[in-house]
Length: 337
DNA sequence: AAGACGCACAACCGCAGTGTG
DNA sequence: ACACACTGCGGTTGTGCGTCT
Image (cartoon, rainbow, N blue to C red; front, top):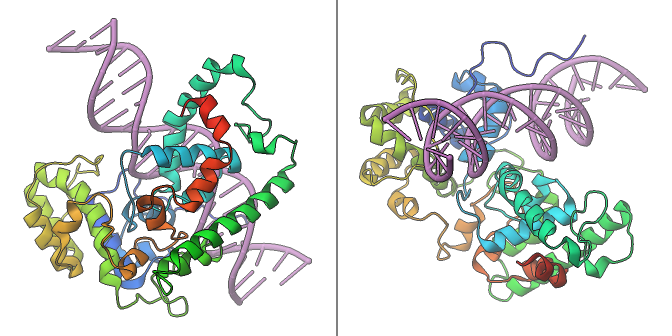
């Protein structure tokens, strides 16, 4: 007996509607991420489990930053890509607010071309291209090195960097979740529930409303554009969460983050009712999480990735980043970064 | 103004890894 | 040990939008 198709025929494909997003987030708010097979069945969504997971991890998951990549992020991606190859999930683990899909897209559509241009321009200054999956050579690794050696070295370096960063954070945040998560980041890489769900019960923790506020933020971004066009459907969508009775708004699809001045008061009310979260406006006006968030709050920015979170974003040239960027300052200069 | 083109990104597809009975 | 189910990952595609001609 062969493996059945992943998705039954008849499942909906294509862009997600805001109604579907809200239904999905609402379900995950209640049950937590995971057990994706059960999601379509329990929510009534005409989507396959894969699609639900993908939508959550790439778009609705709390703590996702979208839009422009900063110079630091760009450098990180370039270095990590050179180190790890096209292992986007691994790379994404070091850019906690970015998804692997986002990074992959950014690399394929922009960075790869940019690097190629740089390399073409600088090709007469010596070869920067290494063999195999390492596209950029490193002066500090001038000896030919097998993949196994590379990975061992990488693991050692990562471990040391994490340790150093953890120690650096420990004086002020000895009990902070950031350093704890950092230290445990490796073991948490593949455990989606480890951060905001009790891993035994898979139940949301008591601070769940905090983490889903940022989910609301993600949806709000798309809803902003949506509501601008169809204000009636928006209120309908909100009711869909509690009643699942909203007739579908045909032809309304998720659109790229079009930001408008549409009343955030309406959104605030909507999400306040959805998630019991009062300070939606604060979040919706903030594309990034505020550094003033408590450690507990930052803990819940992301449920699956090693949370070096605030370190990367808020700490200029954190130890980890320094480590990454210092691997070969010479290469950087050659590349003109 | 309109068609062609390129870009950005969400989503899909298929394979691989892992867990479970 | 094996088959199956589920999940995660990377490659690829489809589509909407902006820019160019």
